[in-house]
Length: 137
Image (tube, rainbow, N blue to C red; front, side, top):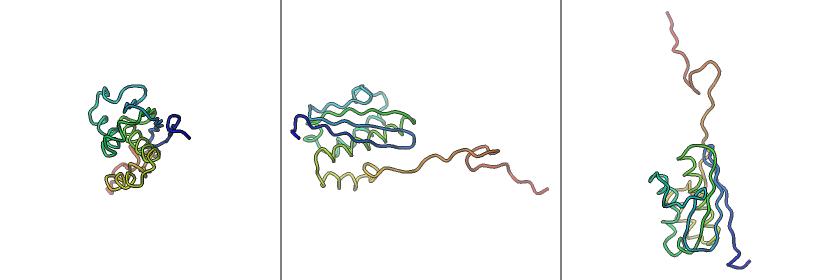
């Protein structure tokens, strides 16, 4: 496969959010749901998605174009899913074990994910675990 036609597709999940990341050789542009990453209004979300690029370095991040499509879940769940998909795609694109180790040392969930889900609400309860207070008298 030539460098020009190389497209890396990765997938990640966090809670109810799902993210797909497409990486191609390019100029360093990153789009989330067809919106440039630079104009995403929430700075916390923007920085969370940019973490893999910052850790990878300027050389790698300026040589790729990434399109991330996120759906489901909340804002931070989507940010985590996008971050994980981007990190996995960068590792796959570069084929670098060194980059993979950098991500694992920084935050293991960048590559491995977090399987925790919210617990569903039970019948006759206020929430997943809360019950009416027991009265003995």
